[in-house]
Amino acid sequence: MRSAGLEASRFERRLKLLLLARLLPFVERNYNFIELGPRGTGKSYAFSEMSPYCILISGGKASTANLFYNNARRQVGHWDVVAFDEVGGMKVTDPDTIQIMKDYMANGRFRRGVAQVQAEASLAFVGNLNHPVETLVQNAATDLFQPLAKEFDLAVIDRLHFYMPGWEVPKNSKDLLTNHYGFVTDYLAEAFRSLRKQNRFDEVEKVFRTGSHVEGRDATAMKRTVSGFLKLLHPDGAYTKDELREYVTLALEARRRVKEQLKKRGSFEFYKTSFSYIDIEDGTERTVAVPEQGGKGMISQDPLPPGSVYTVVADGDSTVALFRLEVTLTAGTGKVRTPAGLEKGLKESLNRAVTYLQTIKDKLGLTPMLAQKDICAEAVDLSGGRVEASCGSAFFVAMISAIQNKRVQAGTVVLGDLTIQGNLKGVPSIAEPLHVALENGAIRALVPISNKSQFAGLPEETVEKLDVIFYGDVDRAVLKAIEL
Image (cartoon, rainbow, N blue to C red; front, side):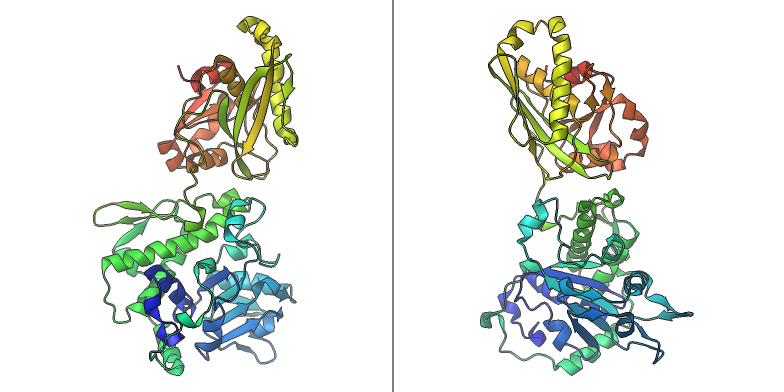
């Protein structure tokens, strides 16, 4: 760190590792790194000053010729690292560039004309976040890749190995600079170039294996990151198990940050984000969290007041939203009252549930009471999913809960919709809603029986940790949901 001009004694250990992560592309071949964060934190310094084998492209235009292969010279660029500064303003002038970048980021080779070209340069992207990270994490309409140009699609982002949380790095100040000696940059650059030739990729497999959610690209990203830290901090090959654990944890966190944003963009292909690793020696499994997301836990483990219930809905694009529905009864004349701005799909679901209640109120002996009460209902959007919601079953459960003054069982979510005659309508898919429910602390889920055929396709974690209960009509849903 002193060689990079920083006084290591002024930083906590986590921040030291994050700052050293900027050097991973220098020691790992074909490593894909991104750092987005506030201005003035020294994001581009390492790539402009630490090695003559790195080229920093500031803003401007990115063409295939100056990045990968120059047809006129018939040569691959001789850079160890190609870094893009101010990546938010990057303009892609050649439509082939992004496709070539996808191929190159995946396997280090690409086609140019009739030739297949192999190269080992790592790619680094640095840029500024224009909003506080809390806003980007909580707002469903934006994500942590918000500054990137539209050409950076899901396929490009999925090839990133490490997302450095630039918002954790303090702004540059004299207090952080060192007055001690460090290595001369030219020497350090040659050391980095020599370390690139080493292969430490499989070191982690001697001690840890990954959990079920860590898929192919995730495992590759983690191993490359750990390999880089071992080269930087243990060039002699001597390290402890706790140090290796620390690198594995940070590597999985940085890759999970990428995967969480892919999932947020609405592609359920990336729903497996519960990253974990297992100690081969004792079989202990540890889950790795992403600090900025915190503990989601939006579903209370304690019973809600009567009239309240959780529901999860998903639209045709697999975008998922979590709601808490709240129904209360007030003195009135049998009207339904909702807050201004209640989303259309929610209002229609409520109206269907109310219509069905009106058709069976005589049978339930509720006619006199409902004639003297108004039903006040609202929906609290807990996830910002902005989904066209169909959740008539949950609204009906909430109404009966309010009428009977009985609580819904703690940690319960109710899926499904119903017609004005009380007939059940299943959901397009239960995998995405149940995953979100489990992730947010649900214990039980009531699911329409028409969705039972999808149960076999649920992830093992969902089946193991969530009590899935199927119901054949909405009256059964009420019996299974409300506390006895």
